[in-house]
Image 1: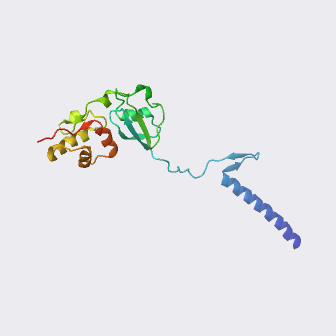
Image 2: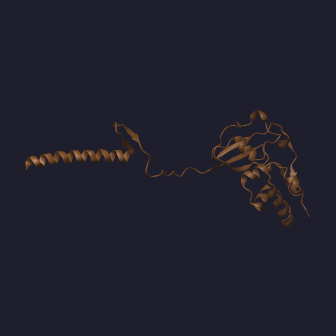
Image 3: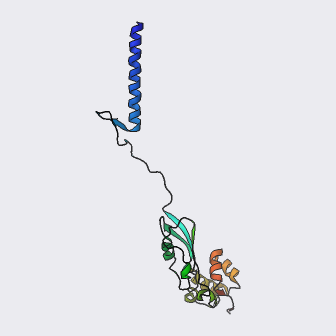
Length: 192
């Protein structure tokens, strides 16, 4: 009986080794061919893509562009795309100091287009926020048509603005926009 157990024990061990090797081959996706070479087999379950980053990113465009502000762009966009979304470059930009238009933007990137020294946009006369119409207000860098209309509407209903901080408080304008448009506004005319 001891000899029979020894033979059974050897067969059991060989069978266990074959089972372990087969399980390992199945687990790694390998299939044995008639020559004994391993060849990868297709996975039985489809791969599930891991959630990736957002499909868009936010970029702040400032300086000598038509409409400075925050823009949502597709991943892989270039600085030229961000500037185009901001309405393009103003003639008062310093063409010798433009950012690299071919560079890829990343989330949170600030693209600044510098003004030329002594440019007409910086040296221009200020526009009176208390007497200018919508069309005149829209010529100010950073002034959107909606903001220009809001200035005229609030001014007509509540009276003239005393200062930039009064305008900012009345319309809820953020600091960056107020700083940008404030360079081009005056508050001289008091309307009746």
